[in-house]
Length: 446
Ligand SMILES: [Zn+2]
Image 1: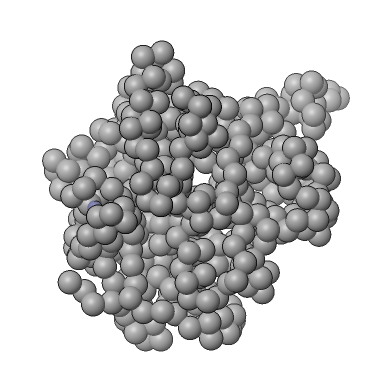
Image 2: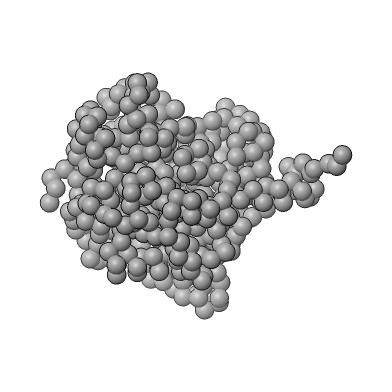
C-alpha cells in the first residue's frame, strides 16, 4: 500500500483501502472509490499558486490544472522538479484550465435578477477540447500513463469523447469511444473522429453506451476514463480552485453546476471537504445541481418526488434500493432521458452517491429547468460575448429559478460553471430564427 496516496471506498461502513497502481474504480462492496492523500496541505501554498500564474514558460505552471499540482499529487512527484513533471504529468502544452476563471456577465445577472457584482460565471468551454472535461482528463490520463495503459475507453454524450481522444492522440494511446447513435452534438462527434478515436455507435442512450463501454473495458483490459474513474474527479477539483483563487479563497455563497453524470457535483464536494479539513476554508458554499426536466433523476429522488421519500446521503448509508426501484420504474414506463441539452441527457448518473455526499456536506439544492429555459440561458450568455452549450444554459436558468423562489438572495455571491462551448451551432441558429424566443434576433433580408 502506497503510504501517501491510496484509494478508499466511499461507503463509511466498508472503508476498504486499495492501492492506486491499478484501474480499479469500484470497491469489492460495489461502492465507488475516492483518492485519499495522507498528507495535510498547508495554506501557504496559496501564495505559490498565485506566483505560478507568472509561469515563465513552465507549462505546468501555465496549466490551470497542474498549477495546483500539490493538491492532486497522486503520482507522488517532487512538484518543483520540472523534469519530473515533464516525464509524468499529462498536459496539452499547459492549455487545460489556462483560460478559465470567473467572469461577471451583466446581462446574465439582469436576466437572473442578481446583483451585477455578485454573479460570476466560469466558462470551462475555453479548454483545449472545448469543455470542462480536460481538467479531469489530464489527471486520468496521467494515471493511465503511470500504470502503463495503451488503450483508453469511454462512453460519451460528446465532450468526454472529444477530450479523451485529444489527449490520447497527444500521448499516442488508442482510444475507443462509445456514443449513443444520433444523440450527440455533431461538433463533438467530429472532434472524436478528427483526433483518431475509434467510434463505436450504440443503439440507445448514454446510459446504454456507458454499460457497453464498461463491459468492453473489463473484458478487453481497456482503461476507463469516464467520471467513475476517481482520477477524473481529482482534476475537476481545479475548476473550483481557480474560482476560489479568483475570490481570494473566500468561498462564495453558492456554486452552480448543470447535472449529468454528476462527476462535477461529486468533485466539488470532495474538493470542499478537503479544503475544510485542511483549514483552508471556514465557510462551506451551498452546491446547486441543475437537472434538465427531461433527465432529472437526481431532482426527482433528492426532492422526494418518487415514493415521497427524499434520497439523502444519510451518513453514508443512502437508500440504494430506492434508486434501483426508480430505474425499474423508468424501464417499466419506457421513460428514456430526453433533452436537447445532450451533454446532460443522462438517466442513470454514475456518480449519484458521491453527489449525495456533496449535497449533504454543502446543504445543497437540486432544481430542474426546461429546454426552453436552458436555451434562454445559453443565449443570454452569448449576448455577453461568451459562447456556451445548451447544458451550460442550465446554470443561468437555475439561478433565475432559485432567485424567483426566494432561495437565493440578490446579493448572494454565486459562481456558476459553464461546462462547455457551443458545438451544435444549429441550436443557436434555430433559437435566433424563432421570433418567439426571449432573446431572439432574427436575420433580416437585404
Ligand atoms: Zn467498499
